[in-house]
Amino acid sequence: MKKWLILLFSILCLVGCESKTKTSNSNLVSSDEVKKMLEQNNVTIIDVRTAEEYGSKHIKGSINIPVDDIESEISQFVSKKDANIVVYCQSGNRSSLAKAKLKSLGYTKVYDLGSINNWTYDFE
Figure 1 (cartoon, rainbow, N blue to C red):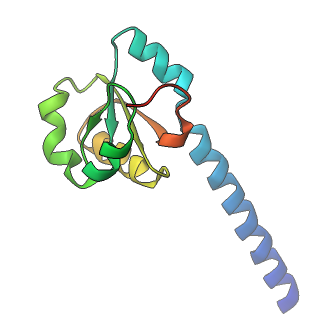
Figure 2 (tube, rainbow, N blue to C red):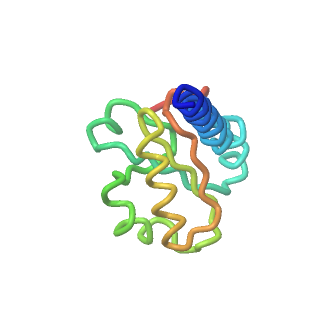
């Protein structure tokens, strides 16, 4: 009986991890979608990495607001709560956190590009 419980628990853990990964990937916006928003002048792209990381390479037209400062500085750049906002970082962890923070502030159209490496166009 104990072996069956351990087996069942192991299967449930694996299934839970798999569905969580699929969900987080499906929440990412593609670089093509962001490019379309850029072409329509309909988006603010925010790099939530450090100033040093931003200085080394960033998406053309993006602004730098480190994730730790996003709550206090976002209103200086985006005043409308229904404006399109895209966030990105180095690996996708900080951008996910920034998206959650922006949503908690009432911003309704926040998109996560994830990693800067997901961007397939020009950098500055």
